[in-house]
Each structure stands twice: as structure tokens, then as C-alpha cells.
Length: 239
Ligand code: NI
Ligand code: MN
Image (cartoon, rainbow, N blue to C red):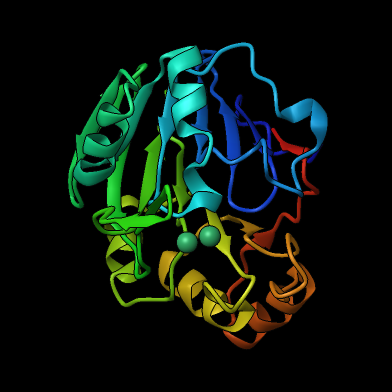
């Protein structure tokens, strides 16, 4: 457990999946990939409840468990319009579609959809279905704390707008390289976002995802960014 004493608990489930338990005990699952996620510890694959699920894009390593968990726990599912259509067709209740720039409230928390630079096709029975555009989310908690889940993305100049508009306290940034930013790009992202804490994600799951928190710390020094890197182990909690 890493302590910042903000009254919530944020657990890294490995890869780019996070479980957030808010001060008001609302459970948010960001990017539901636990069952087939080799980095997710066994005891974190089960849930007691899920109030809200957010989906950043259509790739399997971000939403493979959306159908199963969506049917079981009936959370509000915050996602783009195309993923909403896909999940609805699969018989999943509770989708609440939105698009970039918009904000909606769910379970007393606020979810703002922001830009990401990535793709979003949904693999289904050997076909690829159009999954809209990849995105990130800024989650505003009961006390106003803001957590930016970048999803999968390259660094992009709109991150300066995300910093200006939402001033995230915590940024969950991919650093693995190959499919997303590496530590070098993530440090430039952090320069624009100016978070107090950075939780690195989307690294180490597979050998090809080579970025490390140590490399991120080095790159942040070069960019003169003094954010604290909170390198969680899968299953570990920032609270
Ligand atoms: Ni992806
Ligand atoms: Mn991914």
C-alpha cells in the first residue's frame, strides 16, 4: 500500500486495468481485463460489486471481460457510442455512451471523456468491428480529486488542454512502448499534464512492453517534471 491519504483506494490490476474504490465506497472498474490478464493476481479477478465500468477502447486487453462483468454486476458502463452499440447487441445492460469533451455523472462521480491517439477495433468471432475512437477519462471523485486514466495512447498536444481544463492530481499513464507511449513520451505527457502523482501502466505484461518506472523517473528528470512516480505492483493499492 502506498499512502497519499485522499480517502480512496486505487488498485492496479495489471496492464491498463484499475479498480477504484471511492470515499463513498463506489467501485469503478477501468478497462475490464482480468480473467485473461496474465498480470492480474488471482484474488483480484473476483469482485463483490461494480458500480461503474469505464472502457477506453475496443481492444481485447481493455474490454474482454466487459460482457461477462457487465451482465453479472450491471454497472453503469461509460464508453463511446460504438462500444455501447456492440455491448447492447451482446445483451449487456447499463451502457451510458458519450463522446470526447463531454462529462456525465454516474454513482455520484463525474466522468469526462478526453482524447487519446490509438485505434479501437473490436475483435469478435474472427472479425474486426468498428469500435469508434480510443479515449481516456478524467474521473472526478466526491472530494474533487481528479484521476486521469489515459488508456492506450501516444503523447499528443491535447494533453496540454487536459492539464489546463482538468488539472489531474493523478495520471495513470501507459509507458510500455510498442503499442503506446514509452517512458520518454510519457515524461513529455507529464510535463503538459502536471499531475502530483503518476502511476505507470501498460508495461511488463508481456516481454515486448519494455518501459519501466525507473526509465520514466529518468525521463521526468530530463523534462524537469517533479511528479512522484508511484510504481504499484499488480494487486497493490494507492490509498
Ligand atoms: Ni489498445
Ligand atoms: Mn492495450
